[in-house]
View 1 (cartoon, rainbow, N blue to C red):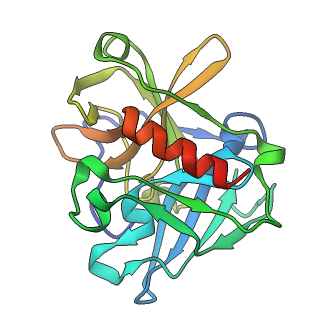
View 2: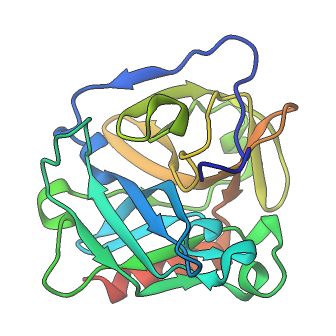
View 3: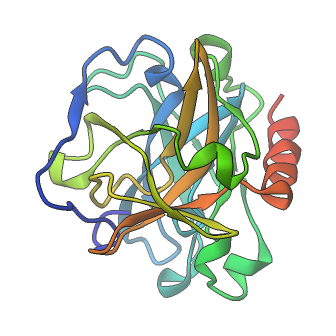
Length: 230
């Protein structure tokens, strides 16, 4: 989220701009324009997992310091400067977990946006798969992350890839360059043409950026939220 120094550039900035936001998987990544309960404005990133379910960071849907649940979130798939190739939809039908909404625990910083029944961008964009991967799988894997950083204006998608730095039971840490606005971005691995999200980018520290890791309880919640947006 912009306006909170949650993400950082580590060393040299190696981000690359994504221009082809009408091709998969970039078109399944969404810019989020967030209006908090206190009417403050924020930006974030999300990713489609079904026709109208977007996964994002918990702090994009529930802001402890700004009144709790967001008042409204505008979702713009594949935003590219002024171009909105799949239009946009707004929703206040939001999801997160008690570990975030009650405890503000970074390990549980994930959530979802369910779009209205009349708005089904995933039918056109396609969506991401997601899965649980163990340490032995993740450590040698290349992690991909793409989102809408605030330092680039919040309307351009920027991408980077790198291997993990370290893992905990609930967090993936990496030296991938991100900035505020990319909170909620997908962190995925690619095998052949199959892309599987393994984490949700959430927060940054000079010692390494990190993602909420998709472990079995996280997977089960994402699956349930996905089914609510079919």
